[in-house]
Length: 266
Ligand SMILES: [Zn+2]
Image (cartoon, rainbow, N blue to C red; front, side, top):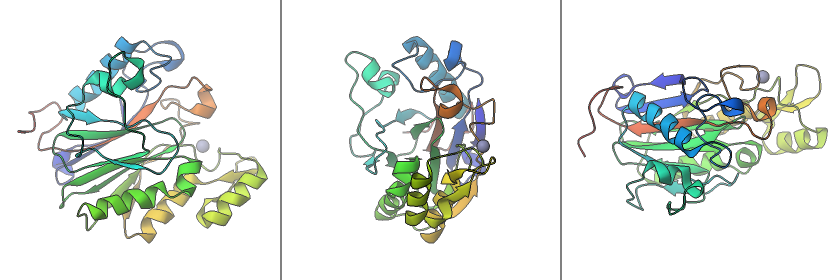
């Protein structure tokens, strides 16, 4: 179920998780633990999959965004919604509240998990445990180069963060991420650490190195927990599985509960 799972008790009260594709109920190309693609999957499967993640993690509520490869940061505290599973599924359910359009999401509310969906793009989870602020960001090529990560860090500083730690989760690695040479050059011009050559010697982009460089320059401590989505069978991959690829998620939450344990008091 999890490529990485750090329980709050082991991380000064902040839970961090990146899911993989194992352990859910989705079938076919979306098997097993699809946590996105409400356009392609059975909604009951999505509900069941998220219920499994919720049960294993112990968070109380969940906030998500409608991702558009942009740089907007949604502050999940502001709307005060009690998000239901159907809100998470979003536009796939009649009557569901529309998800805010953003590619990063930040909260200071205990028990409220924030999530971001990915297949090959870079999921980044961020936390200032002492200040009680957590966030997630979706950084594909476009969002990374347009500085969604510095924008997320700034939003957390604005909310009172002082010392941020980031976990860079599973994404397509620089050995595998081939792009046209013009695209590779443009990426390297804007973010030099992105420059890469694929395993077979063609122009590529190193999304993880670019993300790490941006974060480090802003004083963020970076942990890389990022196996390659394309070459790791237990992970969904847009390039590996095609345009109908399932989605895994990055998750962060402030909690005082252990996995499978009690609930946050609020
Ligand atoms: Zn790779």
